[in-house]
Amino acid sequence: MAAKSMHDLFADQIQDAYSAETQLTKALPKMAKAATNPELRAGFEQHLTETEGQVRRLEQIGKELNIKVTSKKCEAMEGLISEAKDIMGLGLESDVQDAGLIAAAQKVEHYEIALYGCLCTWAKRLGYTNAQTLLHQTLEEEKRTDEKLTRLAEAQVNMQAAAR
Amino acid sequence: MAAKSMHDLFADQIQDAYSAETQLTKALPKMAKAATNPELRAGFEQHLTETEGQVRRLEQIGKELNIKVTSKKCEAMEGLISEAKDIMGLGLESDVQDAGLIAAAQKVEHYEIALYGCLCTWAKRLGYTNAQTLLHQTLEEEKRTDEKLTRLAEAQVNMQAAAR
Image 1 (cartoon, rainbow over the protein chains, first blue to last red):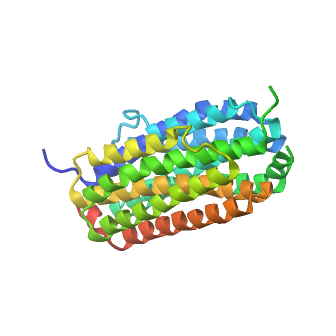
Image 2: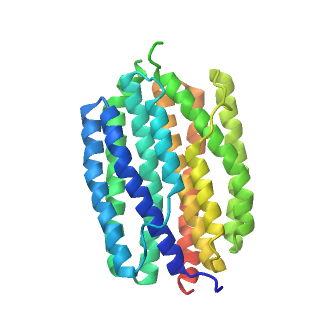
């Protein structure tokens, strides 16, 4: 069998992203429900809508480049979501649990920033212009979400949590 | 049982970090061995030395703050390492595999950047000054490693890989 090419690696990571985002669409409603801070809850709900859009972008890329998006399970996202569930099961005081949920969500966002960062660069190298545009839109959304979580933690949640 | 405090969340995530770093000390030699680009291989080897130092910092924090560091398994890092192994098993052309290894390593670094970012902020809020200093040192190392990987990918690896 011939050694696989850059396109194969790109396809593998598009499948990884698709699995990651679909797993996340199931986890975000639970995280929103567990959040006490109204801004955090609204943030998770808004990111669910964004994530659903990101799933559709990956489906579009799969269709254009003949990549079967459903054929892989992203084990890292499975672990990340499992950690978010652990936080919800620790019996933390509610403000502290919010701080933990933000940490869990920032780990997810950072995973996705690394993933889409690589996918964008590879799409550019491979000349997949439309895919690159779509992946860049998602990358920017993930970065904005991460920044919003940092601001919320610093302005509100951590201060309240540290008083417990 | 009383609801748990910010210290409990901090302790939980210190244990998470300890498990993540010890898992990584076992994975990095395999990633170094699989890398073809000499700079990438040397980078993984250098980061192994750094990671061993990061493990010792966490042990010191555990000792100072009475946190039993060995009592948790970081499932996210388990998933991240499993993905790195998958990359090595894809049968990719060697330059392409290097690009995949960089992506896997950047996911790991981003996970750690999110984790240590939160731990630093919490240590500050909790008044754990020495822990904050140690965690900040690690955070800076993780950021530098991520930047080095980006530079290596952009300057060398991705260009060679995309030609395959």
